[in-house]
Image (cartoon, rainbow, N blue to C red; front, top):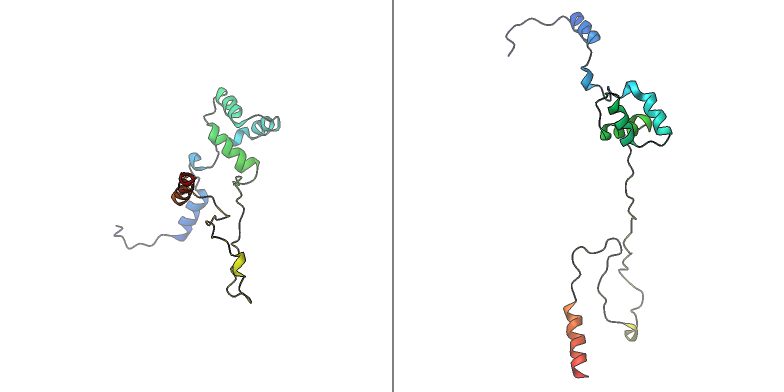
Length: 142
């Protein structure tokens, strides 16, 4: 806790702020920026990030494949955008709340199991017991 009641001089603070230099390790890609043209040249020749990192390592540059790939994505390609999987957006079917005439009873069929169109069910596929009992009973009677 600061017990002195002195206020700092704004002029001194401004001078300190102007002369401030961040630590080199805090500057993004400080080890790769001197080799920018080398990386661009290799990437234009379709060199992989792994081969670029290996060539830089042979010259004494401490870096990794992931760091070179991140440099390529952010600095060379202009952003940190990555390809994402696109999912089809399925809108649910509209439900009719009131119909003008009821459907004829001769056309009504047995209800079918509900299968959502947007996502498949998760988990193992298990036999429908009701269908097994129905098929087993019909097979035993014939």
